[in-house]
Length: 399
Image 1: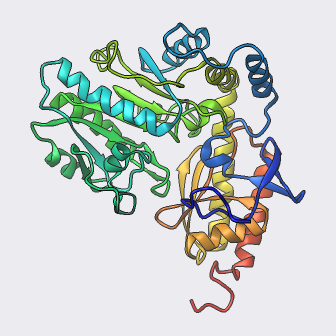
Image 2 (image 1 turned 135 degrees about the vertical axis):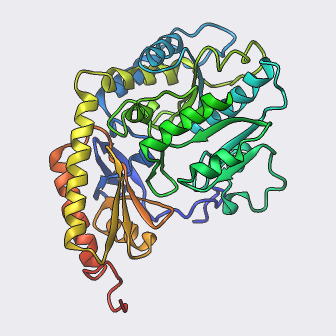
Image 3 (image 1 turned 90 degrees about the vertical axis):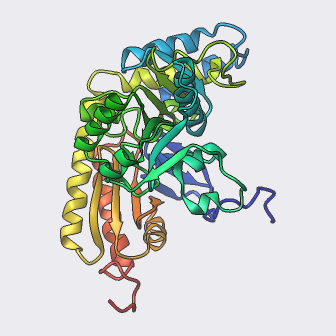
């Protein structure tokens, strides 16, 4: 049957009908170990009972009223996020790319409100992925996402990954902010060294710029901290997060300090669906678990266990695996064979991985993953390498 969906995805010939924890069951009744979590979205796994209960209870009361009225669920979630982070204010969105749009607008509006309307340019890093809206793809600067969409919005200056000298050189009289993913997800699980993140904070302070963190993928406990900026011992002025915040329900958030957000007054920004009662009830349920005693520490332990297993696998198969990257439960295998072949072979072993740039396969399991599931994933990765011919190359391929 011909699909009526716009063909913007190369979808696997596979569908799922239910899930539980880190496992998915296909429409054919086969079980898959999910180390993709819907691209880091199903933070508490599938059908988590606390999330299901919160969603069902709120769905029976009220779904949507619009932001023309107070929304107690959003007020509670906003307060909990600010208390657990650097921020003073939160603006809720439906997605990460909307949160990024809000971050861009907030940074530019800050300088406008400060009497510096000429400051609107934002420095970003090559290889970054900030979303799919026109402004977000312009910020990322990836040619394959820009092609065919006409003139891009002005105001974004990309600098090479890891090049602080180039970043400093890019600062001009129109620069308003630096925007960075602490770990590039789509870009291949490339972590910005902590010393460089600290240097970016110093650069911003020295030049009167705002520091924006894109924590759409790294946030909500994914790296073994609630937010990845904590690893560097610094704080941004503005942050975007999403994905794991809703545990699978569409929910994103823009977080800002009082000072950075001073230009965002009544009428400057809005969202029809953002922060509605249903979404924020689920977000509060996610925080109930993630902020629970010992939960994030456990994520860090499980991440260390998985990373150690991957390093041992690399030591056994150095011709198949070039590098293990990442932090917490946001890890990547830099493969020798083409990553699409690697991911396809893993899928045949009923292990779900996510491809990324730089020939990296992402491992983004639910944060509730356990030791037994990690051990099983490593067994299936071993079988994946065997399927590819032991060296990680296709059977019969020349080394």
